[in-house]
Length: 178
Ligand SMILES: [Ca+2]
Image 1: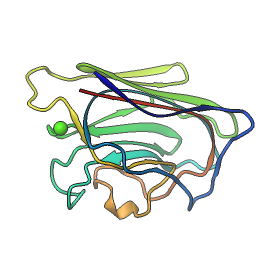
Image 2 (image 1 turned 90 degrees about the horizontal axis):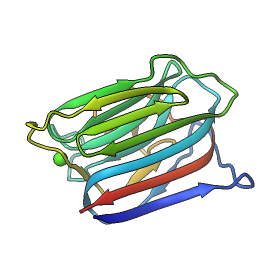
Image 3 (image 1 turned 90 degrees about the vertical axis):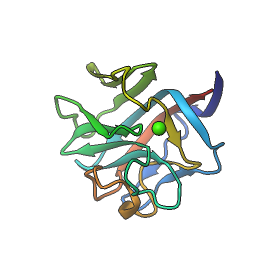
Image 4 (image 1 turned 30 degrees about the horizontal axis):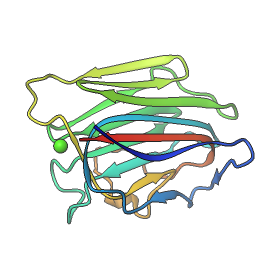
């Protein structure tokens, strides 16, 4: 297994602020088949909705049916994770809404047939059926944090129309491939 570390930043002196039209873009990641992820974001939100993280297949048309993606967004202050590995979209959603103006921690852990969304102390789990045909995330070369240059390019199942507005004090992005 190969670790494609994207970033591990936990620096109280450097807390990027995201307005509704700024985002971080990690470009030119090795095109890979992602089998495992360990992602942590610690953030404070200023608005109830917005895109937090997105990576999708960058084949010619990202909106193509069955193009893999992983998206994390806020919807009325609920944290929503949506993923398509090729079998169709599934969604995990935090049961309770998260507060504004206090730090919250979101973790996404994918190991083998299980994907876990943890929002503070709320845990939601999706177990893939081992008989499902596709188990890998065929990720593209770009990973977006806090927004996207064109929200219209997101898969239509990701129900978000604004970028994230707030601060992210900790980003740990670990992605593993074969
Ligand atoms: Ca796939």
